[in-house]
Image (cartoon, rainbow, N blue to C red; front, side):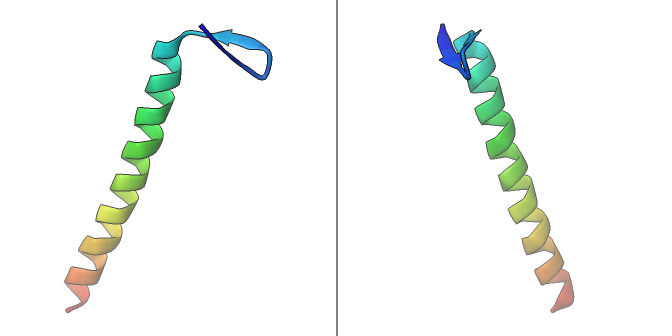
Length: 40
């Protein structure tokens, strides 16, 4: 168990949040690339 802001948080939850953030960033980059490619 890790503590975040004084709360006990299971590692699965921490990794779930990390994965979600990484996926959101990748999706954002891909969306930007597709937009750029459509322009040309």
